[in-house]
Length: 203
Image 1 (cartoon, helix red, strand yellow):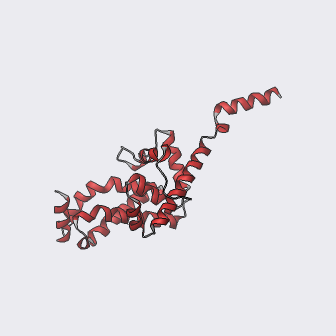
Image 2 (cartoon, rainbow, N blue to C red):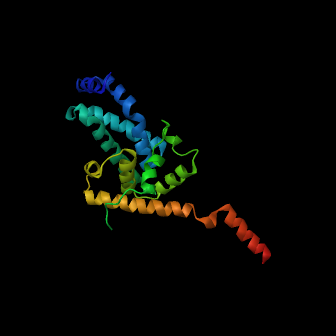
Image 3 (cartoon, rainbow, N blue to C red):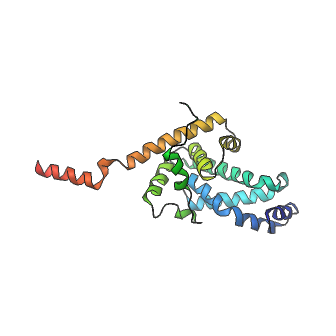
């Protein structure tokens, strides 16, 4: 069943139309929420609630609107939940090596959200760094680099001015660079620690 037929079924009150939409959007939606709330179970709850909300409000939507509207609701719910849990310049910047790789680090080719970073140290560092951003900054980063949304689209999704979105992204990139450089501090490396130990022995 294609998406248009699925939406038509839902508009007729037939919840069988929800299944194709779940199959199409579920894993990407869970991962989107997970990157913001940093909790797999909570991310799944947010997405399930978003699907139920979509089924109730489907009359307001056309098939072309479903994907963007659905991810808007997921992002907003995830940011709200992250805030509730309290987890934790020229603004038009050219893409550099860091931002070019940020999307690759966020995207996981595996379907399961908990597989986000298991095998790669850089992914683990990104995950830990994301936790140190504010929910708004995290939401903006995920929307831009994971969902490939333009700043104007993020602005509409988060009901915030484009200038705020630019500032959140600017600040988030700066913080992520800072956090990652702290993780890679050469003073913390095994070689440097060995050198320090040797110097202490000589003393």
